Image 1: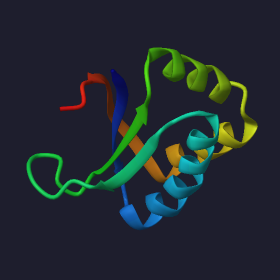
Image 2: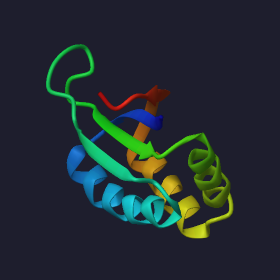
Image 3: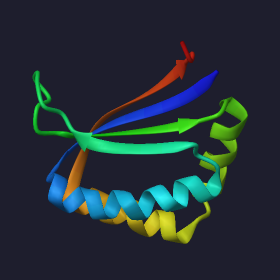
Length: 98
């Protein structure tokens, strides 16, 4: 089963999207299968930016997290993300393809 990490950021999409594109290439190089980013259009979180990152399984999720913990480019970009936005919450979901 896939593992999907979903994060919600209070940020401007115009500022977040270029950074998310850089982050996506790093995540995929380490093993993420997909990275999606976009604004919420309805509900209490409207206007906030969501990022969904998919991994093949728990083992891949763990390997990617370990690799990111020592990747200086990832650390630089994450620090930059925290300057332009505020992480509101993050969920990790075990998802089944239907």
